[in-house]
Length: 337
Image (cartoon, rainbow, N blue to C red; front, side):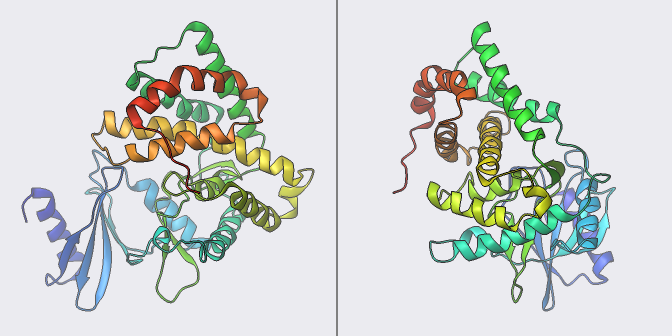
């Protein structure tokens, strides 16, 4: 016990569990100021979420967890909470992230399971519970590329280049808003889905940024994962599986080709955002672990923008002005065969 915070945690857990004979094991952190610990008391385990209120607001997590649990989404049950101190005691989903189970043989089955859960999530009416993924929000996310990645490469766009960038961002934001609007988890990938012992349903975590947005957003989060890459043909097969699972209303006047275009354009918006976020995590927060994933995300952007002529000028800027410096600083991406 080495900090005042850890003494507060110990005192709180003792009162909640009515026992002080528990063990605490802190887990490796993520991209936020939250940290987690596994609590063991006799033969039962729990997960502690420690979110210092001055750094992290855990009210959204609690509100959304309780809403999702009430609508049949497999989220961790909240055992106890103290929002003033920023402590939550949660059901323990175990250690098995979906990402550790994926290989050529298993991925189709697991992804289909995740799609079914995604379709269920999208069927819930959340319009009054979640903020809209607005035009302004979509733009501000893409702006992270301009605010963080370009300066890290010492690139300062001219007025003409700035207009090219603005036009591309406007096009992508409008494309997202034109899609059916549903509950979006917003970080639905294989590290935020967990295999729970003796359950078919996957446990869903890290959902506190949920919004109402495009119905392709979560699909592309998992199929075009920033941390793991699959063959493009296979990704389009998964799009087809997901498309067939969609309710009739979401397929009305929307061919599979239109759906695929929707998903591609949504993916491009997300890749632009992630490039900015990963650089910011390093430059501002000192977290270097995400830099190795930058070349993969850039490769996605280069590949998926092909054929969308509305983005030709923007991609010409990326190819000519950004890529030479990007490769020099962050390295090239080797495509897995």
